[in-house]
Length: 150
Image (cartoon, rainbow, N blue to C red; front, side, top):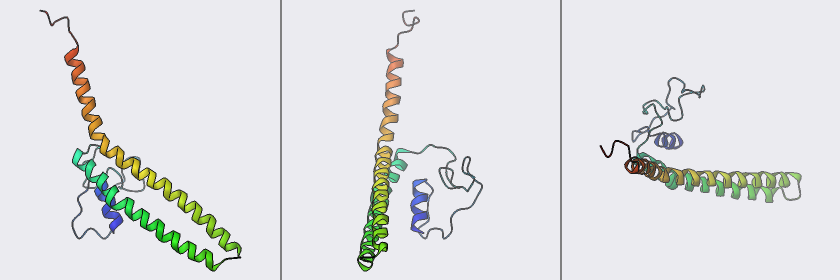
């Protein structure tokens, strides 16, 4: 339930306080034959545009929900796997659990890096668009036309 709400906020679909109990249904999005999830979630704008406030909200969701909850889940799994390893000490199962735990830790590290990069990109996107618009506008103003002296 909470995962669905986070996904919907990241795709800028409003969620009522009680939230839906099932994933949204609808036609498949272009390029996504499995269903409507992604930027074309029912109720979304139907394009890739989002406001600076929506980008900020998505970045804040990553920072306040996804990153801390991912860390907690990783710590929880590490604790339980460590306990299981101790229980199987001297057996091949303990070595297998260690390998699984090492792989899990690497995957979590990769995911945390990706979340941080997405958060940074979302926060920087509005500034980049503004800088591009300003820069292009300045180029138009600085360009002298042969018509200027007439």
